[in-house]
Image (cartoon, rainbow, N blue to C red; front, top):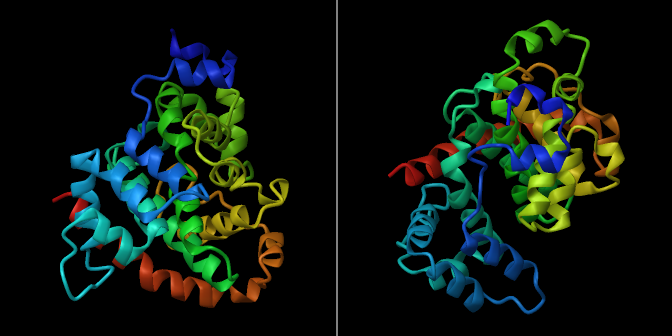
Length: 288
């Protein structure tokens, strides 16, 4: 299909006609659902991961990254699940499963190789930081932050064909979401949520993907966490793409989290202390 008519496509058609869509390994999807199930156990999570030896090897490398600083080497998946916990191992599985397409160059967004990865890990770390301050589930917040921009992977090839129109439409007063909708009929948040639903990801993760730029529409604190974390990452320079300077934070997100915008300085300090360390230590193990 001619990419030039993309603005006429429905979300379903856009996804169906996007070449080389990102995917998640079957074992990762099984682990996500197992950790969300009341019947899920450390044994069942380990069993699913061991069915994919390559994935299991990457998770073991991540488990032994400098970020976790264990005094001894973790050598087996069941041990990793017990030592780190099911939710942390789920996040490591999501990282290991998404890394191959997270490091792609996204020309439609002016993002070079690994720039989406750096931003996504930063937002995941920031979401965990905000969740800790708001006394929420930190592991869940990390997952939501990691995948908040997956729509860009699908949208990039379409925007790449419209660079001239994109530059003409890029007025400082306009949000990048508005520009995406004008050129393509959809924004990356809607596309990302549709993609996440097609993977059958839990609704708790789909909602922050869909509303991370408009958290007031979600009525969901996890979305507020991701929104604030996205702002922290943008402000710290973890996005050099077209939309890097077009992010406005919603003050209501702070209020809904029981925080105040005056907390922004201390949140940024705490975020910066962990974001670079985590990103580098995880990437070293994934690239090994």
